[in-house]
Image (tube, rainbow, N blue to C red; front, side, top):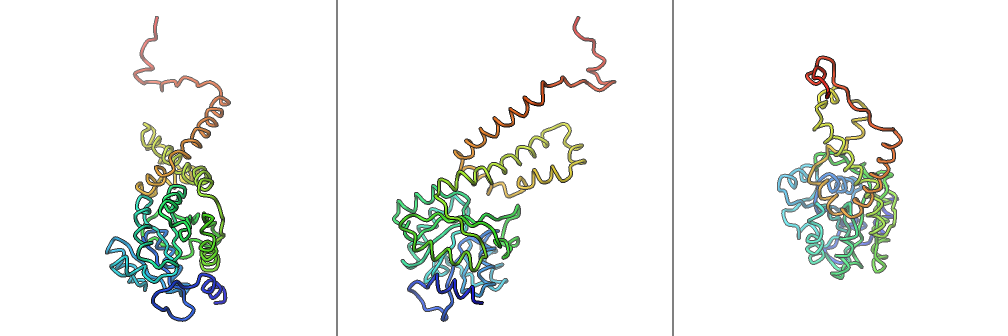
Length: 297
């Protein structure tokens, strides 16, 4: 395919074991929903891709899908031109250092985490900002794991890249891969701008969905609400069904931005409540104990 050839030429191959002519060597570290989707898309595009996951069962699943998945992280990343870091947010700093130590100096490193400022600052502090390009594909699902991976997930999706000034050559190489292989739209942003935008567009909706679902769960009307709930409730709470650990990591890593935007949303909700008028006292149903109780003299 001509587009894939363009990406291969643009990305280049770092020094290391010689690959087949014209084939980019890529590794994916962490093969859950997003990492697995990246892995399978690279496989389908005909690139030389290796995956690695800390879970042996997940590595076995990757092999069953025709992907090279060694037991050693070092074996997965050595000699690769590009490495995607796709593990949980709290693991990314240590994984970045480990991979940077093993991979060739010319290897482009990137991640797919949903917050960028802290990891970008970490990379700069460790002298890696010339080769690490923070990234975030704006795609996903409430499901988790390699079994839920979808190689078409990134088609026409926005893929944010946050290069440092020293990382522009690495950015150009990575952007070619993202556009030509994943068919995504590269959106350059600074890490702080990214974190502020996704706090409002992605992280806060998770919080609000959880708040709505949690309110119903605590309500005496829960069974009746769930019995009548249809599209509006389902759409409003869909992301609350995602893996709790993933949501917690995301909100914790971007807590300041989320709190700022939550204050704005709370203020807006207060305005709406005021426009609805004063709260009418709830009347007890006829025949209830409260209804039969005499009022104060």
